[in-house]
Length: 606
Ligand SMILES: Cc1cc2nc3c(=O)[nH]c(=O)nc-3n(C[C@H](O)[C@H](O)[C@H](O)COP(=O)(O)OP(=O)(O)OC[C@H]3O[C@@H](n4cnc5c(N)ncnc54)[C@H](O)[C@@H]3O)c2cc1C
Ligand SMILES: *[C@@H]1O[C@H](CO)[C@@H](O)[C@H](O)[C@H]1NC(C)=O
Ligand SMILES: *[C@@H]1O[C@H](CO)[C@@H](O)[C@H](O)[C@H]1NC(C)=O
Ligand SMILES: *[C@@H]1O[C@H](CO)[C@@H](O)[C@H](O)[C@H]1NC(C)=O
Ligand SMILES: *[C@@H]1O[C@H](CO)[C@@H](O)[C@H](O)[C@H]1NC(C)=O
Ligand SMILES: *[C@@H]1O[C@H](CO)[C@@H](O)[C@H](O)[C@H]1NC(C)=O
Ligand SMILES: *[C@@H]1O[C@H](CO)[C@@H](O)[C@H](O)[C@H]1NC(C)=O
Ligand SMILES: *[C@@H]1O[C@H](CO)[C@@H](O)[C@H](O)[C@H]1NC(C)=O
Ligand SMILES: *[C@@H]1O[C@H](CO)[C@@H](O)[C@H](O)[C@H]1NC(C)=O
Ligand SMILES: CC(=O)N[C@H]1CO[C@H](CO)[C@@H](O)[C@@H]1O
Image (cartoon, rainbow, N blue to C red):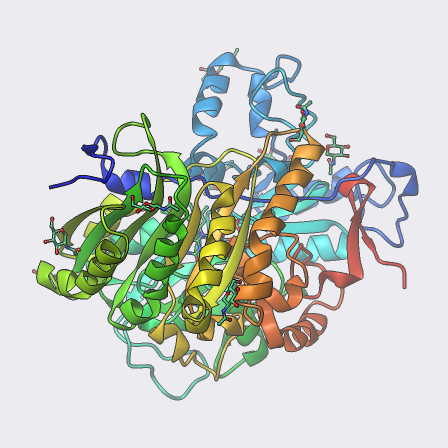
């Protein structure tokens, strides 16, 4: 039943879903030039330790007391592996080395982040590498309440200390960590309260929808599992530990987005600590500009989210399709003609209710024979909602698969498997994102609309071939009708306007070795090389998804926010006149730049 033109029999050596989502998806950069602290200028730069501008020990002690002892001064987590360091401990080191490749490890640590370059590779859990700890925050407030956050924000503003916000530390762009900073760690701001309907504060009209109010550090798995007990779910992401803090503020895509809109479109109210230290409610009736910008304008820019109220939906039953269309004839250029054709069907398949994740490649170790051969082609993990009847999927896919079989006879092995799940959560528990962390990597992104996917398949074959040069290109079918027609409360939100036409978020990762500036710069060059034809030929007027993008995306202001950018900057200037929140690439950050190898954050001279 399963055969290819090469006559090989493929046997499933491991669950397909694990392979499908086990892709190295990764990120980032910092233009680091030679260090030279002599250029420190207190009036122009944020304070750094060891200089007169840095707050006194007494000030830090008082901050600690005011938070009830929640101020931490953490060691870099990798320091337990370095014999010279006070925290050296071989037992702990073994634990850290194992945990390093998991998201769970980094989210649970006060300062660690998933992609090593954002901590400047400055203390990897490997004794042969250096461990300076430079690159990590100096102090952390382990916040559990909005008031703790406020105390940190007021302190950073008053003392001219660089400040960052960390939740899970998953950020592909390095926005949740910075050297010589005070970090507001929101991971432990939890809470999860479902409601049958919702009256936003100071509004007169009750919103007739099931909703859930969650803490700013809440994570996908907590939402899914708690809501499942009510037969509900949310528009959420694939990673178990992704937190609402970065996800909702960046946009938030997921399998249910093509039906209901992006995650940011579901937000009805936010509690926010503003850069001036006020704890405010933002919704369609008050602080409307803040409400608009916090839904898509990016994390750690307009304020710190301490709670969000978002719409929930009945959890749909799902039919899951796992599909492989591949060949061992990896030199055959028709692979990308097939890929271009398959992706050209996404607008139509999406309009008929399909959503999911596809991966294409010219040559990867064959997952079906344990890597003995290589294959080129594509894989897809997709779902159809509200049905358990496999014929619904067969009817949808048959014309597409028949077209491939007849256009490229005997070339591609087509292998599919359909599974029915009673709820979103039942599906999720088997099909969550199983990728791993703890490496050095950058990502790239492009949003593709129907025209880009269908206009010229000759062009698309070339462009997708180049895009997959990273190893595996991905095309997530996670936008569509629901995103195009979404009506976010309050008359709109700040997500990149390109989402409102897109069907596909195309993304990929490029890894590189640590402590090698050449390799890091090469990785960034490669990201640009793979993305260039998508930007310039396939989808020039479109944009990129900020949360899974190239941190050095040219013209990032407009690629991430389109014509919302100017309004976002005006709001940023009003809400954060002193730039208490600063990150890169983030709205309105143009007045400051990193200097001295990234050690200092300084005003750009006028
Ligand atoms: C395994 C994995 C799977 C993913 N799957 C998806 C997916 O399916 N869909 C999708 O859209 N994205 C997905 N992403 C990308 C994800 O949206 C981003 O990585 C996002 O930035 C994570 O947010 P975080 O709060 O968990 O991470 P963090 O790194 O802690 O924070 C990210 C950014 O948000 C800021 N931030 C965090 N919390 C707050 C807060 N409370 N208030 C203000 N700012 C805050 C940080 O300062 C930083 O700028 C995935 C990422 C990973 C690693
Ligand atoms: C803050 O106070 C707590 C409790 O008093 C203490 O355990 C902790 O070490 C202090 N933090 C710092 C950074 O000194
Ligand atoms: C090393 O860590 C282990 C486990 O955390 C602990 O039990 C042990 O006491 C530590 N050893 C030293 C010398 O601190
Ligand atoms: C942070 O606070 C949470 C909640 O109080 C606590 O469980 C956790 O142990 C704290 N983490 C650290 C590193 O102090
Ligand atoms: C959830 O759905 C199941 C199966 O239909 C039903 O038995 C159960 O009562 C529902 N639970 C709630 C809280 O509605
Ligand atoms: C690709 O493979 C097909 C089927 O094996 C074959 O007919 C075709 O000639 C090949 N094309 C090239 C360019 O090798
Ligand atoms: C399609 O793209 C190819 C490759 O770039 C180009 O040669 C061709 O002219 C394009 N066709 C049309 C109709 O634009
Ligand atoms: C650093 O990376 C470059 C480019 O990838 C490579 O050529 C070089 O050998 C690497 N240097 C070291 C010391 O590993
Ligand atoms: C990062 O590390 C490099 C050396 O690897 C150093 O030159 C630079 O100053 C460091 N930057 C920060 C911010 O620590
Ligand atoms: C959804 C889909 O493509 N289903 C096909 C899977 O493969 C069988 C044959 O093994 C076909 O009958 C289905 O139509």
